[in-house]
Length: 516
View 1 (spheres, helix red, strand yellow):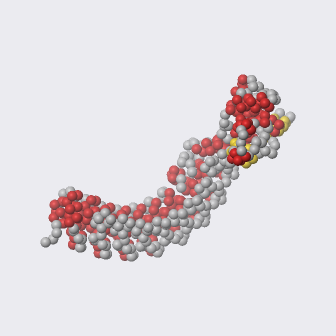
View 2: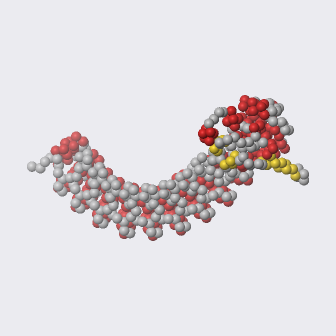
View 3: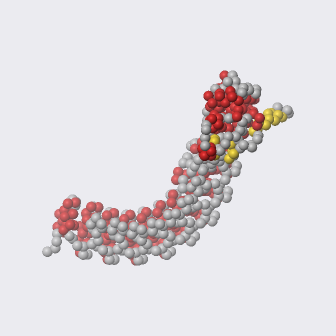
C-alpha cells in the first residue's frame, strides 16, 4: 500500500468512527485535519478536528437540517442544491441531512492531498460549485480522477457497523473478522433500523453455528450491552428463548448461562408482557426444558408473570409442550408457587389447555396432580367449553374413559354446551374412533348427559355417529342409546337412509324403525 494511501486510510477510519458515534461533522475540509509526524518512527498520524458544526444523527445517519453549515468549497451536491432552492422556513425545518455529505467532502479532501494542495473541482469557488453540480472534476490526473470520482459520485461504502451486521447474518461467521472489526473500533452497541444491536441480532439469528458461544462471549467481553432491547422491548435473553431454530443448538443452555452470568435482566418483559419463562413454555419443545426453567427460577425469575393474553407459564406450558416429562415441569412450577388457577383472556385455565392440546396417555396423571393441588375442575371458557368438552373433542387415547370418570367424580359439569351448542356426547361421537366408545357413552349417560341434545345444525348423537363412526359396533351403540331413551325421529331415520352405507346398513335401519 502506498504511504499516502495509508495516511488517508486513517482519515477514512476516523470519519467512520465519528459516524458510528452518532455524529455528522458538517465541516470536512483540509484545514480541519490535524497532522503529526514522529521523526523517530517516520510515522504520520492524521485526525479530524473542529466539531463546532457537528450534530447528532439517528440510526439511519440522517438529521434535521434547518440551515446550511460548513465551507462552500467542500459542500456536497445536495448541500449546493439546498442553497439553490427557494424555500419557505417551514420546508427548511422539514429538510433532512445525511452523513453522505461528510463522505463526499472527504473525497474532496483526499483529492486535495493527492494533488498536493489543488482542489479537484476547480481553482475558484464559482468553478468548484459549477463542477461539483455537474460532477466534473477538473484538476486531477486520470488515475486520481477515477479514485476521487468514486468517492464523490457514489454512496459511501458500508460502515464497520454495517459490516458487523452483515457478518452476523452469515451462516459461517468468522470470529477473526469480528475481532478485526472490534480492534478497528466498531461501535459494538450500534443499532440497525430494527433497533437491533449486534448481540440482539445474534440472539434472533436463525443460523446455527458451532462458534456461537465464542462470538457471544467476544461481544460481551468488548462491551456489548446485554440489557439492550429492540423495538419490541426484547433483550437478548427473550429473543434467544423464542428462537425456535436455536433450540436445536447444543449450546442453547450454555448461552443462557452466559447471559445470566453477565448480568442480563432476567425479568425483562417485552411489549407483549412476556418474560423468558412464559416464552420458553410457549416455544421450547425439548425435554431439557425442565433444566432451563430450574436455572431461571434459581436466578429469581418472576414465576407468576402473566402476558397480555393473560397466560402464565403454566397455561402456556399445558397448551404447547408435548413431552411426557410435562408432569415433572408442572410439579416444579407448582413447588415454586405458580398460580395454578390462572385463567387467560379466553377463560382457559391449565386443565382446559391440557385437555385441548396434550395427547400422551399420562394425561390422567397430570390431571390428577392438578386436581390434588387445587385447580378448578369446572372452568368454563369464553366459548362455553370446559375440560370435559375439550377432552371429548381432542383426546383420542383409549384411557379417555378413565379421565372422563375422574373429571365427573371431581365435579365437572356434564351438560356443558359450547358456543355452537355441541355437548360432550356430540363431540365424543364426532371425534372418538376406538371401540370402547360405547363404554364412554354409557358413563356419560349414567351421569345425566342430555342424550337427545341437538346442536345449531340440528345434529344429534346418532346423526353424528352416522357420519364419523365406522366400527361394526355402531349397532350396539345405537341399541344402547335407544334403550337409554334416545328419541328416534323421522328426520334421524331419513338421515341414516341417505348417508349410512356400511355393511350392516339394513340391520341399523331396521333398528331405527319405530317400535310397534
